Each structure stands twice: as structure tokens, then as C-alpha cells.
Amino acid sequence: MRQAETEIKLVPGSFAEKFFAAPHGCRSRRSSGKDGRFIDIATQSNKITGKLDKLAPVFGTAAAVPLTVSVPLITFDRTPIMFSKLLTTLAVCASTLLAAGHAAAADRPLEIGYLPILPMSQLFVALESDTLQKKGAPAPKLVPFQSGPALTQALVSGQLDVAYVGIGPALVARSKGADIKVLASNIVEQVNVIALGPLASYFASGDPATAFARFAKDHNRKPTIASYPKGAVPETAFQYWIRERLKVDPGAINLIYQGEAQIQQSLTTGAIDGAVALEPTVSVVLSKLPDARVVAQGSAMFPRQPGAVLLAREKLIKEQPEAVQQIVNAHVDATRLLRDNPAKAAGYVQKYVAGGRLDKALVEKAIRRSHDQFVANPYVIIGPTRDLQKYQAELGTLDSAAVTVEQLFDMRFFDKAPK
Image (cartoon, rainbow, N blue to C red; front, side, top):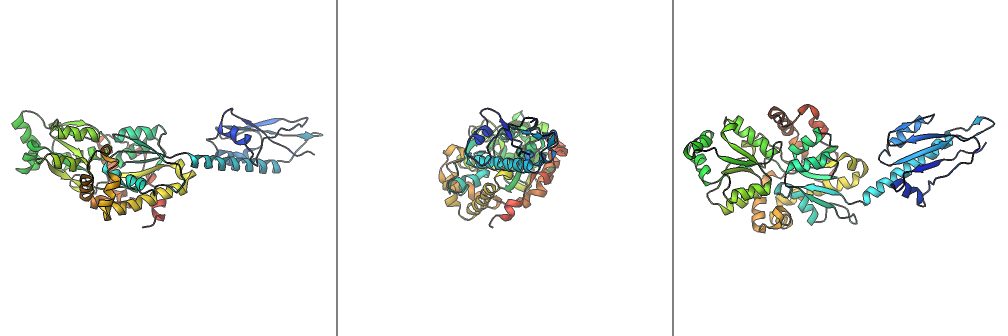
């Protein structure tokens, strides 16, 4: 009785074809059995025909590899060959191929999406202090975005390995099927409402709940307020503030949606009356316009307000857990530096926020203003995230039934990070 051999059929030009053409221990072989017949195993569909259903778990793990295996069942005198050695051979081949695929993924630069604003400072500190990745790893591909929804769309469409983004867009992306997990918090209570001179005066002299109405009466128009797009944390916090805190009809305000760069420009040029803003825009506007004023911020707008987070794809977590752990470790270290040494951190952050155009002293001031808000511990924001999700569902900006908060978080890496 002759030992069964395997024939590996590969997609031309695929990684699998290149792998089996290389001098690895698992090579394609062709049987010359007289009565050989073939059973196809399609890994991409994870379906196995014939009598090899036991291999489903093996090939299921390699579903991303475009590979088809055909197994000859060779017989002599009508006696079928035993499958035990064949199963072992195929299992070894599949495991070897999977390991090689993971190694190739580790050699590919990580694609990291982010917004160039202060709440993403941990990324900038980790990059500049060279702690984000282990020595020798390929430099990451950085992809800046001007708004959370744009980054959300990238996540939903399968782009990016890692992202620094608001918890609001993270919830939206997960609800739309993105395979992402939040690994750490960046910042909490980050949102400010800043009013320019004319509008600011109504908050300074009278009940804040009537400030918008009194402005409208005196100026014969609604005040124009710029905000991040719907579903973002700043927009949600603003909606909660005017509806639940001030009890103001949203229709009394002309609310427009812009990205951070546009908000800063609109404020400094006087094109709007106020805005829902983050750092460093708040510090920039206050330094340029002395009559501007922060009229609401942090938990005064939304209780225990969660902010920006660090997240990663589940595929990356599964295939490169050591790389993910390195990123979280660097994140925790960067948070500590931001709180303990703002002057040093400012030199790192300045290169990335607002296109590197801001003075280092101004960036340092913004970091100091945010000192108490830099928080890496994801446990701190679980409850507030649940509250945020509930309120977004009430506003109609999120389907709360599509994802639970528990599904969104993965605490394992923060738990292992040196504190």
C-alpha cells in the first residue's frame, strides 16, 4: 500500500503560491496513483467535502489565504488508504502556512489613523519617543483625518490597523460591523463650548439658559455655533448641554458641522458666534481673541464625559498580540509623561497638532489645561460610554441595539501594561 501524497493547487500570484514555491518544509507533491481521485478543500468558504471534515478547524484559521488543497485518495486492489498520516500532513502544512502568513503581516507597516488634535497626544508622544513599536519594526503608515466620521468610514471599509479617535465614532463603527476593540482611554471631559465676544457677553451677564435667546432678540438672528459632526462626542455633549442642562430648544441655534481645522478658522475669523471645540483650538482662540470665553466644559456638559480612545482591529489583536501590547504599554507611558512633564511632551506633540504650525509654548499651555483629563485607564470610561451610547440612541445618531459596550472593549492589554 502506497503512502498518500498531497497536491496543492494555488491561486496564481497569491501569497500561498509564493510560499509553496519557497524552500519551506511543506512542499506541493503530486501522486501518481493509478486510481487516485481528488477531494477539494476550499479554505475561503471553510467547507470541506468528502471525508475530511475534521480538517475544517485547521483550514478555517487560514481563511484569509487564497488556497485550495486537493487530496488524492489512492487505492490498490480497491483498498482505500488510511487518512491518519494524510490528516497529519495537511495539518502541518496548514499550520506552517498560517505561521508564515502571520510573519508576513508582522513585516507589513501598521496603518494608523488619527485626528491631528490634542486628545490624540499619546500617539504623538509614543512616535517621537520611539516607544510605539519594538526596535526593527517597519515605520508605521500614519493616516490623518479631519473628522471622526471620515475615520469611521475608513474603519467600516476595512482600512487601518490602529486608530486614535473619539469613543462616539468608535461606537458607530462597531455598530456598522467594524471588527475593532477599544484598548485604552486617551482623555476624558475634553469638550468645551467657546463663545466669541458678542455671544460671550450674554453668558457673563445673566442666566446662561437665556443667553442664546437674548442674543437672538438683540441681533435679530439665531447665534451660529459650529460643532463636530453628528455622532461625535463633542456634538453629543453639546446636545445634552442645551437640551438637558439649559433646557434650550435646539431650533433656537443655528448649528453647523465642521472639522477641527475649520472650527478654528471660523472662530478666529469671526465667521461664527461660538463653537464646540477641543484643544488646542481652545487655547489658540483664547490667545488670539481676548474677549472669547469658555462658557461650558467637561462634566458640566455631559456627566463623566468620555473622550478619545485607542483602538485596534481584532485581526491585529489576534495575529500580533505582542505588537498590540507594545502599543498599549507606550500609550500608558505617554499618558504619564503628558501629566508629569508637559514641557517635554509639548515638544513631541507640537509636530503633529494643527500641522505643526502652533508655537510650542501654546501647545504646552494646552497640555497643562488638559492635565487632569489625560486618562489611559479604559475602566474609567465604561460606564460613561454606556450613558453616551444611550443618549446617542435617543438622539437617533446611533443604534444602541447593534453593539454592547462590553463588546467594544478589550481590557487584557491595559491590565498587563506596566503602571
